[in-house]
Image (cartoon, rainbow, N blue to C red):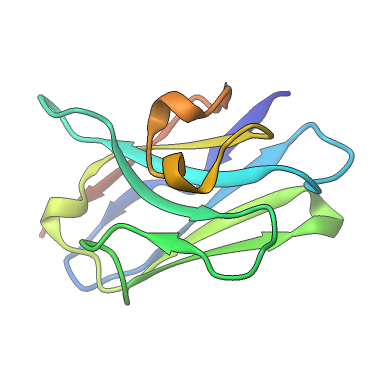
Length: 125
């Protein structure tokens, strides 16, 4: 599985960006889809995930209410809509998918098998 993340850039605080992750799969059925981020000098952290059921997404507390994960099955692409961005959101954002993630481990990066290359998001005035 190959993943291609895009959509990062420089944005002012309070602004918005939409990240995209295009996947080389026939279908997202059976996959957990997720976004993680890593800021300079920090460990990679969970941002958002869409479970296999596509029912209730999971979000990090720091982004809840501001970020939304969504899926376009027809385009084999999933997204991360980021609103009201803050300087502390600055990081390299990576998309990831896996078929073997269990719910209790959905926030753990070690649960995921396939990773995209990452896209830089910088929030600064």
